[in-house]
Each structure stands twice: as C-alpha cells, then as structure tokens.
Amino acid sequence: MTRAIAFVTVLLLTAAGAALLYQATARQRDYRAALTRGDNALRDDQSFAAIEAYSGAIELHPDSMLAYLRRGQTYRRRGDRGDLDAAARDFRKAAALDPAAIAPLEALGDVNYQLDRYGRAADAFERAIALDDRSARISHKLGLARYRDGDVDAALDAVSRTVRLDERQADAHYLLGMCLREKGRPTEAMRAFERALALAPGLVAARDELADLYGAHGRRTDQIEQLQVLAALDPARVERQVAVAMAHAQAGHWDLAVLTLGSALERHHNDPLIYRALGQIWLERPRDDAAFLSKAREALERAASSPAAPSDLLTLYARALLDEGAVADGERALEQAITRFPVEPSAFLLYAAVAEKQNHLTPARNALIAYGTLIRPDTNAVSRAVQIAALSLRLNDVPTAVEWLTQATAASPNDPLLLASLADAQFRNGDRTGAQATIARGLDRDPKNAQLAVLARRIR
Image (cartoon, rainbow, N blue to C red; front, side, top):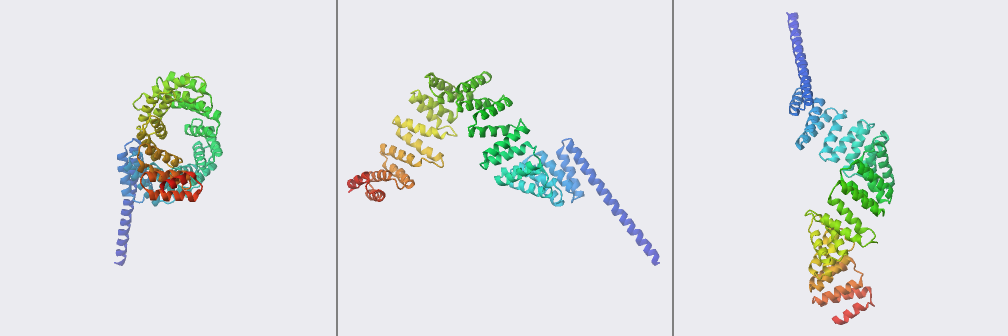
C-alpha cells in the first residue's frame, strides 16, 4: 500500500514537472516569436505593430532586458516627444534589468541628448564608460553632452580621452577645438581644427571655426583661403561669397573684394546681401575718389529698399547718406532703423547725434535713453548721462537733468565738474539745500575748484 502511494506521488510530481516544463517552453517559444514579430514589423517600418509585439514579449518575460531595449529603440525611431520619453523609460528599465549591459545605457544617453537633457545624457554615458573605458564612440558622446551642458572642463577631459583612443576621429578633433577655443587656448584650437580637416576636408563646421580663428588672429591670407574653400564647397549660398569679399576688405584688398562681389552678382542677380556688402566696402574703403561714396550710397539704397531691410542695413545706408550731406534723408533712414527689431544699438547713437544737430531735442534724448537699455554693461554710461542731462536742460526739463546728473555722479563720485553740474541743476530746480550739499562734497574733493566756488557764492 505504501509503495503504491509513493509510486502515485512520483507519477503526479513527474506530470506536474512535465506540465511546468511544457508551459515554460511554450512561454519561451511565444516570447521569441513575439520578438521576431517585432523585429519583422520594425524592418517593414510598422512601428506600432513592433511596439505591440515587444510589449507582448515583455508580458511573457517581464525581466527581459532585450525586449525593453528593442521597444525603446522603436519608440525612439518614431521620434515624437512623447515617444522619446517612453523610449527613455524603457532604456532605464533595460539598464536596471542588466546592469552589466552597455547598450541600454548608451541608448539612454542618446535619447536624453535628443531631449536636450544633456546632464542626464552625460550621466548615462559615464555609466557606460565605467563598463567599457575603451569605447571612443561613447567617450565622444560624453564630451558632446558635457559641452552642450556647459561643462567645458568635463567635455575637454572626455574628448581628450576620445582622441587618445581613436586619433582618426575627425569629429572628436573638431569638438576638441571648440573646447580649447572656449578655454582661451586659440593656438591649440587651431591645431585641433586643422587636424579635423586633414581627416575630413568636407567638415564645414571645423573650417568655419578655423577661418574665424585665423581672422581673429590677423592671419588674413589663411582666413581667405579657408573662406574660399567654403565658398567652393557651398556655391549656392551667397553668404559664402560675401564672407570672402569682406575678408579681402579687412585685409585691405579692396579691389579684390569688389571683384568677388561683382562675380557673385553675375550668379545671384539683385541679391540684397551682395549690394549691402558692396555698399559697406565702398563706404569703408579709403576714399581717394569722390565716386566711392556715391557708389556706396547707390548699393546700400538698393539693399535697403526692401520693406524687410534690417536695422543694421538701414544704419549703414544712413551713414552713406549723411556722409554725402543728405542729413534729412539720413535722419529718416535712422528713424526706420531704430524701429526695426532686432535694433542695431549704434543706430540710436547716430540718430541722437543727427537729431540734436537738427534741433530735434526730444527724439535725440529718447534715443540716448533707449541706447542705455540695450547695452549692458554700458562703459560710457557717465558721458551718456551727461548728454541726456544737457538735452533735458535745453528742453527746460530741469528735474530730468537732475535725475541723470545724479546717476552720473553716483557712477563717478570724485569728478568735481560733474558735481558742479549737478549742483547747478539742483539750484535751478529750486533745491538750494541739495545744491549746497553737492557743492560741499565737491569742495571736499577739490577745495580750489573755481566753478564750485562761484556756484557757492551765487547760491549764498
């Protein structure tokens, strides 16, 4: 009897084990079939079906790193903001399920970079590098993420490691150059950009940066050479030809600059950018011929005739008109320039000077005040405040003059001439006590100042 019971028990356990094994085998088969369906759907660009299939695989195998990774890759491929967030969640889950896997961490870094979450991207790439510190690819991604996150030092460390791991990666040399430039190491930055271009001559971004550095350091011939290559690589962009011409002008090659723009006009008829550059060159070149100024005005007039002409172009046009003696026309051009956004700040200063000469005192004062709101820091704040105060006195607006002279003396408290001007304005404004206090401050600093002494006697 006992042996019969034992035999039956063994049979039952064997059957249960077989059933469990069958179920596990069936579940594994269904899981692999779901993965295959997802892969096939993705290959056929059916992302919704792929996500359904991978989700089915996750239901069958909740601890599958691979299913989460592939579903995350599918979400990322769809590209919408919500899909990218879903991809990031799946990649985080995949990384948690298999902490030794690099692919989920790299993918998590990639999707966070796409979402402009550069700090999070860098953190994911650093975790991946901790698993494989020989990957130049991930090290470069870490450098990019740190650079975009504003941490130039960390970016420089990462990209320097990238270059050591793979010296022939042109993009890494370009990023290295960007970091070195921001760190104030231009000579090393130039070498990095030059190396990037030796590896990838068509890397336009590196050539742009190198041309800019050459120009900033007075290497005009080298700058022009780079700009000419850029123009050849991108012949459809008129801006490239204009850049070559302006570089020639900065080098003093005025005739070459004009010839370059003339050639550009043959291919891009009536382009306002070319006329603007021509006008600027004729305006700025040494005027050994009276016709130069006329040519500048004609070219800038053609460029500025568009209703969409920007503020800086209208300011250039106004300069040409004023230099020709057309003051009223120049003032009108400047009135337009200070109402086009974004406003060229120098337009306010030029307009203030012209308006004051025309005895348009209120617009002149308003322009000076507006200029101060645009420029930070304003290194000429004191002299501008004195100008505004002087215009206010001419307008018989004494309280405003006092206000601006008070600002000027606060910025320059040891200037006896400013203190004398403030005291005079305070007295004219009926503030005898304030004027006497200001005079006392001034005489403390300069006891022999004649202007302050005269003011003191007058007030007494």
